[in-house]
Length: 382
Image (tube, rainbow, N blue to C red; front, side, top):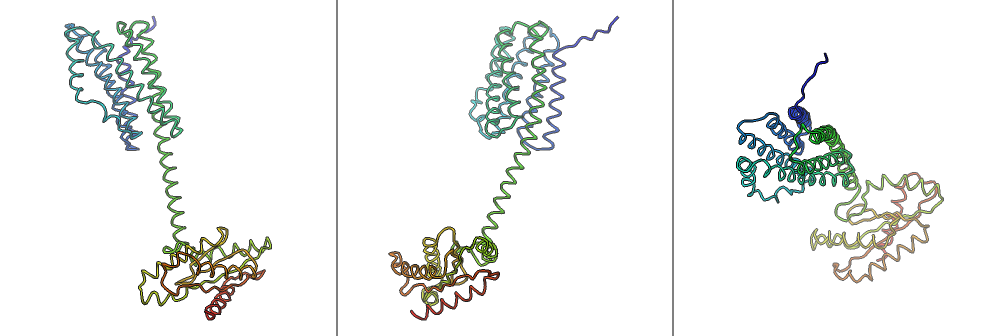
């Protein structure tokens, strides 16, 4: 004679919910994310809810009390699932819930079934938990759209499934889990629970990889900012001499390969030391910033403007010597004619030296010194 084992679906549901809760607590111990803890608390409330319905009570008023409390716990599960999604997305919708009504709702579900029977709490309990589940599913669905997380999509699917299940149970509240329809609901919920546990574990893993991507992005951004700071003069925003050392070899090779001419302009600010001595370093800094902005406006973006040091600037420009000579004269004339120059201390001007980088050059420093000498020759003419 085959052995027959009677399976109480409510006790089975309680056991399954406890297992899922334990697995989620392990995840929380690893990740320390509040949404995992709240999600596991939602599954934990299913344990006493199911156990309260697992056996009959006597007298009938006590049975009705058990039904009311179980419906209240069902609503608590939906609320915890919603709170979990709210914590994950950091939307703070839970704060908008009118919690001042919580005591009244709890009293309704605990007291009224003993007075008027379970019908007054069954349908409201199923419908409220269905609405909360659908809202939580919508929020996890938003996570799927925002971050492309498959786990969030699976959780949203499960929550929508549970919402539909509770909705159907609400309209068929007269049936118990031992009836055909009730058993079908039980099987559906069991399958959804398995997918729900899988979805949350997948979401936790995806959340970890998402955080790693964000961290890597922040590190890359910080690295780029450090590199930029290392090659940029903090006062003028021009490139510094360190960047010239990095870029000169590359530019020399590029111009040699493509047979492009390259020239240097060496620029010095006239009467800058007198301004510093008479008006102070703040006025001197103002002059330096103004000259740097002027050079950037009049030098092509494809070329380079360096602050060489003190009041000296160096321009690496793609042109032959004759054009570099014309460019030097144009810079001096444009600087003297600029309307903004009226705000500068009297006598401020530019002395500019120029030279072409000979083909086959491997060390740019001798060419820089040649442009520097021509700058002093130009300064002597003023």
